[in-house]
Image (cartoon, rainbow, N blue to C red; front, side, top):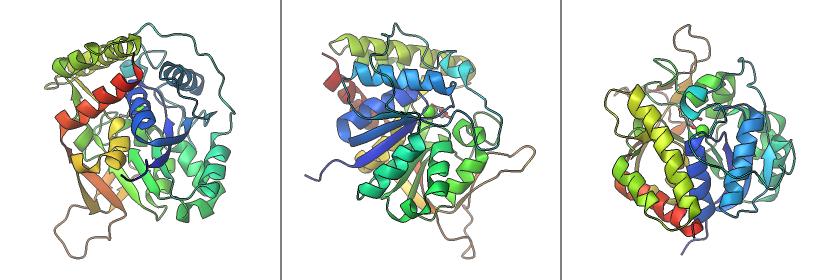
Length: 310
Ligand code: RIB
Ligand code: CA
């Protein structure tokens, strides 16, 4: 039995970030959680991370990070996650403050002193880019970066997925960092939907946590079903970035070259995947995740929730 993967989860909770936290706490060696502005302003995403960590009884270090992108103007996703960033459930007040407001230094320090750590960003890539720019040495120290973001289509614009669109300059730095990179984009995350039958499995678990997370799934899914032509539930994006490391057997990935557009009038924030059947195509810099055994992956999410809900 191999030892759990060491990781820092960099997130913007966010309903699906919350589920990623639960899965990481159960199946990874969660060395820390850092927050970034994205789905909601930094104070909200940090508060939400504190609440989720409380609810699962995690004492993982929590450090607040960037309150705005490197260059872009701050934008949120309240139209999906609500004004709080985690609307739709009766949540407790957080019990503990963040350990610091310097997530970037925490990421740098932890990467320097820990062999084989993965960085798992599930929000805009601002913190990760700042850490790599401040301490370029960590690029060769970390095991890699497994991110949720991008894809061959967008959700915030025609071309761009929210995490990349929110901070394209940061994303471009991450995709160019030179180390191992796994991209779980919309092509795979839209295949992992919180359908009513799957939410019922969460609801059927014992304990308060399961009820709260089922309520969050319902809120999140109602938004997705109302906004999309043919979806039966919310796309459970962020756990894919964790599961691609903890349960790689559930995913199909392909090494390909991906570049981030930072200047296009209509394509800013787009991740351009080189899918040409040409030998002259660019060398891969990323493992692009294309497919998932959705039933099995969602069952891991259910089992992870069950482990903390009693
Ligand atoms: O586009 C989906 C991504 O943007 C997810 O990470 C969601 O939480 C938001 O951050
Ligand atoms: Ca997120």
